[in-house]
Length: 350
Image 1 (cartoon, rainbow, N blue to C red):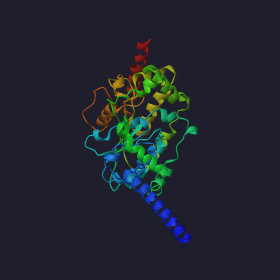
Image 2 (cartoon, one colour):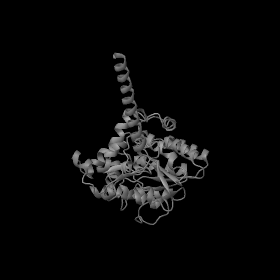
Image 3 (cartoon, rainbow, N blue to C red):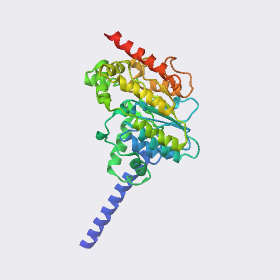
Image 4 (cartoon, rainbow, N blue to C red):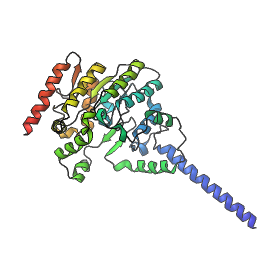
């Protein structure tokens, strides 16, 4: 009798464990919080982005032969909305704090996955050209690429299950990712000013905080990461389109105040001399002078992102003063324009 009872208990335990494992695996597969299996539905139409590099690399194989281009860069390119590229189906591969040379490795991966040609749009920013790599919290790109090939590694993970339920509950969030990598910011969400309100900072203080965080070590600027990016692009034999991401007028003024302007000017010169031409949005214009196009002082919202996408893809829906194509031929004239543009804004403040 005791033997049968023990066997029943063992059988019951095994069945319970099997049911639990099946439940965890099924939820992780259907909700797909790690973006591994390419499952889309109402339950995961808003995706939580807790590890952009891994998630976007995981999802790339599911869209690579449907897309015609990628837009890549740091978080300052997150809101460049892919649906607004003129005549192109584009995937947003932008990741937080992504160095230009690390972006190159993700580009190499994307190009190698694609059956035919891929149009590449690369966002550059001064912060990731001066950022101290000694405090970088991210792995090298190869780590994420290799992890993306292990599709069933996390299917029974409790941690993945937690992220699955968090993703399901994203129906009330004001920021989320969609299925093509766009980072969506809901403009009319009641908490749209959450950052400014909770910190008690006004626009000027937000800009000052970000500039000191981004460019406090501006004297460390070198063109080495841009040169490494150029090497991989040359190896791939592709001709990407480059753009420098916009920041607010107040950000530019604070950049001048801390003495970082020479680094900015050198960054512009190096970008043009290395890549041949760039679209520059980082100056004072009707978009950067208005806070309604920015989430904070260095990240556009989806309205500003739409203008960037339209401008760099030969669209027509953008303010006429937003974006200047800078080439080696007009570089010196553009530098003179920038000096007048930003220094006049600084003198107007005082």
